[in-house]
Amino acid sequence: MRINETLTEKAITAELANRFRQYRISYPMTREELSETAMVSVGTIARFETGSDIGLCNFVKLMKALGIAAHFEELLPDPEERPSRYLDTYKPRERASKAAEKSGEWKWGDEQ
Image (tube, rainbow, N blue to C red):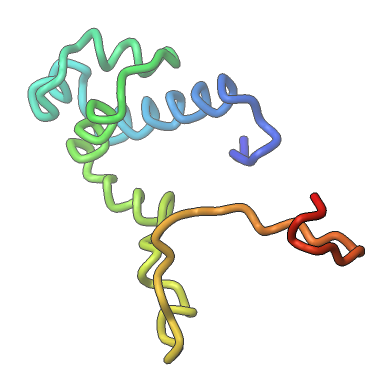
């Protein structure tokens, strides 16, 4: 199954859990061995493999223990490595804001 924005959060979680389980089994590594390597409980691994929430920190530990943490770079690329960064006029944004609405009619400052 391809993961995309049309899937529900539960469907994405279930697919990630299934893929993780397949990676662990093909490694090959038992839950107990992974538990010792990742320093998380066997119950945490079992919960994750059934699609339950285990927390981001535990997820990172599990990914590192299987040697697949480098894939996080694809998941969330470094914003400093965007092509626009190499422009002479590049200035990193400091906060997000909405674009101002433009109305077709011009008004004086006291006419709101």
